[in-house]
Length: 321
Image 1 (spheres, rainbow, N blue to C red):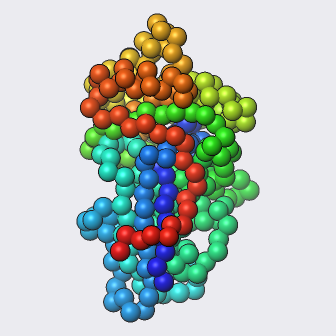
Image 2 (cartoon, rainbow, N blue to C red):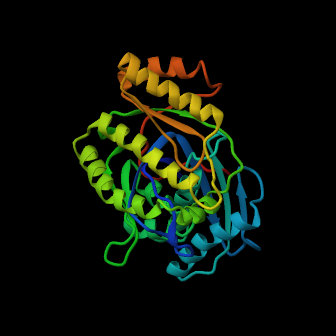
Image 3 (cartoon, rainbow, N blue to C red):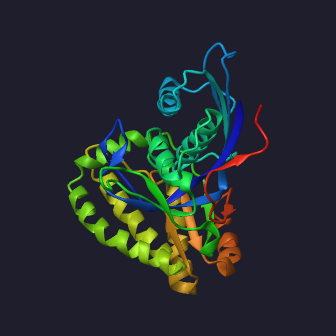
């Protein structure tokens, strides 16, 4: 049986950093994100006893050993749930965008999980499937349910995601500037635990999660964007003060952040920046201001990708092979 699925990469609004349980990918705290419609992953999965072995291709190439092991964790868990040992052929392609901190691991594992589960004949509820795709990449749980979503670190012993608001219900526009980096995200996640400010971040998160949920509930775009910018600075503070003293931003990141603040503070444009664990910049604004912001950012960056919020992972009628 052959099934294809699409999922959208995420922008962290209240970002997660650090894992309490690395194997199960359980974080120290809840986190909130929004999917990005312009950053999608399409994955086709075929199952069948005629296949001699599992075959996995990512963006047309054989994955590294580490990448394949992460994919197998999700595939094997779904085979276990289905009570099957059938082999799989997997091909996955991301949107043609090169940059670090764009959340493609989230969309990749969400699409893989949905396509594989359907190809194995499973009918899992989004909450249950989010717990499975989380084993490949924590943020995949939120990519799976889509829109504006929350990932619970621990809710009655379970760690899963649920949607807080649909993609179309909040009129936010994002301009994405992809910036490459060789930093390994898992390494950064481990190092933040050595920051003297990590415990302070955990205390701060209790309040900001509540405020972000409130802003999403009220459909308050400016407050959502403002809180995401504040959280960016908080997150990068602990990244820079860990034992490895990791600086994830690049000179271009800083120039864009400065320009966003200039637009807001000197020209009154409702615009804010957000960065995840990488130098790529998400610039959040309202639809009416997006054209002006895009023109200004294009004077600094060669590639700017406009995006609306994206929905949940979905099954497609066309396949990659």
